[in-house]
Image (cartoon, rainbow, N blue to C red; front, side):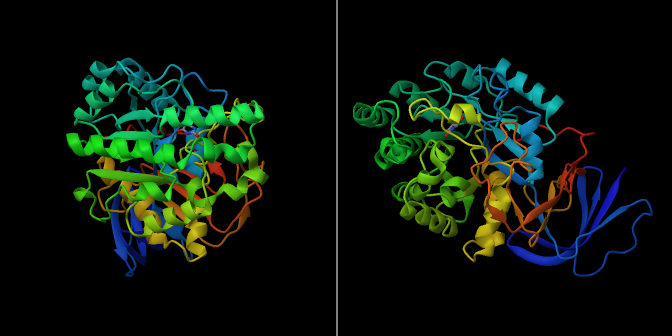
Length: 448
Ligand code: DOR
């Protein structure tokens, strides 16, 4: 069985930050030594000297759209996991708005087999809720499915639950976490008509946060929260984008005490509405990027534990699609290769400590979804690990972007930290620009 010893690393895990050494044996973390040098190891052990580098648990991204099946001109389960691993993301949780939408057991199983044959990262899938698939949701296995995804607000694809009775029935199902995209469709449609009558299809991109407005977000998030409170269901609000929605959330570091948890995405922390002028549709997301005040409130809410997870909502579209006028340009952009280095920029700027980034990107997704044996650097856990050089600057450009769509809204951005190596289940899948694709990732298992 293969063994690798990582020596002299700055290990950042469970709110600690210490110099140590770690032995990987097969798929697992066998031993961790803090400070003291490890006793002699077997002669065939491969040794990686991580002096000056950081060792983090692999990132678990709880919201990606890898587009397979059906939308594979944008991304697929081979290309996007590679980009993820190059960015230090070892596990992803994929959303159901593919073509067809993942709304049945058969379609869930098809995705699992596709990923098992193509993905170098570990994977899990959400089942999509519709107005009429409650029987399929009831059949879903909580041990192999991430959760139920509810679009309360339409976005890419045709998954929208707008029937109050269907929503109520979904929230009564308590066996799986419910991940909600919360934007009120009626408010959005009304706003869109107002702007369309003024501008036609070519609405200026900076109107996007006025169409997909704060009110639309707050209205839908409030409804989701009240349904979860009524039925005691495990609600996970995804990609919150406004200061106002934070008032709906509890503030506790003890996740076990939270019925309602919440995610923020890196783009809502990084961009604000001043960026529409330069980036246009490249930063058109649903929910929209909003004001600087919202961005600052989201950062503060991460620090005081109103917000629990940092994810990407990685949502690739082609540049040709993005080039269309406002009403036809799809929302979403790729981010999974850049989320960790981008978040580490906040650390370098003194805004978010690296320990906190690890908590929100690695530990908390594992806790909230109850992922077995991942998300931490612990003996006996899967060796999903990232070695980062905190001081090896690089610029995002068309040569180093690995997304199938070939672009990033971060093009031209200088990032100070670089992912050097990524281990997935003990396998060195990415090593300084090179992939070893001899192993595939595993399906995530949930302890429920
Ligand atoms: O901007 C978005 N794009 N938001 C979503 O929730 C879906 C995503 C997509 O799939 O394109």
